[in-house]
Image 1 (cartoon, rainbow, N blue to C red):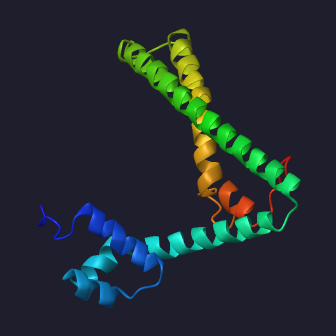
Image 2: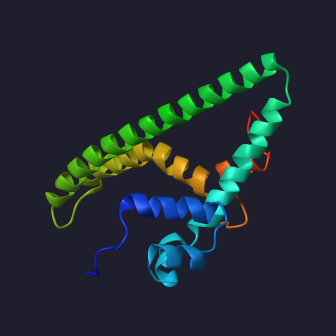
Length: 173
């Protein structure tokens, strides 16, 4: 186990904010009396991601601000609805995974009680339970695939990336 950090969680959060605003790692390391590599290790990869998200958000907000007030209200309302749908979808996926876990536990218990040379009749409930498990977990699996892109096809961006690029239509691609 490594040594405890010299900085508190609040100090680390401040370092992260200042890095995202563009301050140099060397300056922050000197100010907080930690090694430059400590800061780099802690925040490598996060700062560009934070900056990109902040720029996308600022750009979207500027676009909305240029619209008439009545349209701005509609945009914000639609955005809230989309967030709600996403939350409901995620909750449904989580419940599906819980149900899949329960079914899979029962299927495994049945499989342990199979004879050494099971007949096709013995295997039917196992197969049906496995298919049910797959069906119950498919929503969560699809959600992960949509948000991360297809791991088999790395050139195909995920849903979030397609929306960010403005290539997503309401009815799909």
